[in-house]
Each structure stands twice: as structure tokens, then as C-alpha cells.
Image 1 (cartoon, rainbow, N blue to C red):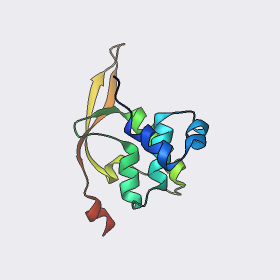
Image 2: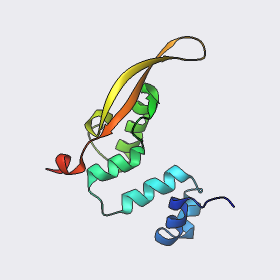
Image 3: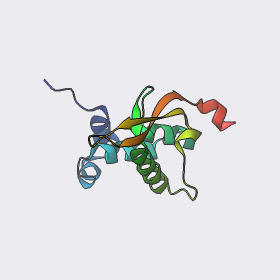
Image 4: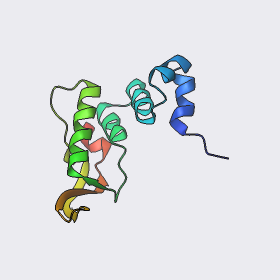
Length: 117
């Protein structure tokens, strides 16, 4: 039996069936909508929307795209930066064509209490 996605299950209770259908059952869209409607502070919402884990390696392009998406979703005037919410380490990796590609690795999540002060 397949595990039920936590956010999809929560979405039916908090957002309603119509809203989940309107979001086309897209996990990221549903998750973002639940986070937006939560009573969390802005920093916690941003960290939750990134959905990065410690040790995770992300391409620079994916990071830049996700920052722009979150900025747009939250309606912020200033572009957010990953390094404001996570300690990162820049690294390089080779892609399938053998070209060097800039990557970042998530080292640690910044404290929400420290950024709220």
C-alpha cells in the first residue's frame, strides 16, 4: 500500500477539494498554498518553501529558479537569497557532456529565532 502524501491529505482538510483540484493536484503547488495559509512567520515560510535538506546538492540554476518562484509566490519586492536562510558550500560537478557545472550544498539551516530578532 502506497503511503499517502502528508500535504495532499492535509490539503483536503485545510484547502478543500475544489482548491486541490484547482491546483491540479500538483504537490509543490499544494504544499506552497498550505504554507502560505499557515500562521508561520515569513522566515519559516521561506525555509519551508525551499524544502531543502541538509547535505542536499542543488544546481545553481535550480537554486536561482526556486528563489525567483518563492519571491513571486510570497509577493516580495526584494529577491530572496538561499544564503540568507541556509549555510551553503559552493562546489562544481561535471554534467553528462563533461562540462563543469556550479552546484551548492546545503550545510545547515539558519536558526529561525536568530533571523526573527
